[in-house]
Length: 169
Image (cartoon, rainbow, N blue to C red; front, side):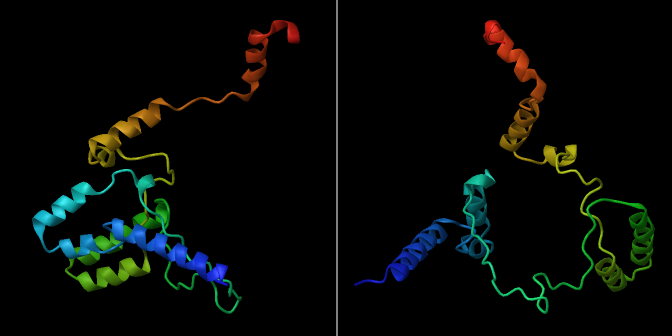
């Protein structure tokens, strides 16, 4: 009698191997082609533009999460999400180190005081320079998303029901 757990695990591994063999990023084809200009350009052109169509590999969930072993053991300072007054003060130190030619000291300073990820902490805002550097398809999709934004009015449901059947009230 075959073991159903091992059979389902082997089926899962086979489907995962099929996904890996068809994806240029996950199977290392892009890395190998990076030394060959024309082949690299061809593979980059063949990649899917829509990231929702890309295969997604789930992270392994660890069951052993004791207080002695935190999940994210990282002693480095996290990057701030937006610019604040402290960044502008540290930015002056960074520019002074670079201007004086102390590049290694500037690298150390930036590791100790990471720069913010964005000027504003808003995922809905994309700078016009970034949009201008996107592909035409991505620009059209961003314009459609801006045009298709609906204003939700929960109180308008009663008015709609009244227009459909005024005698029901």
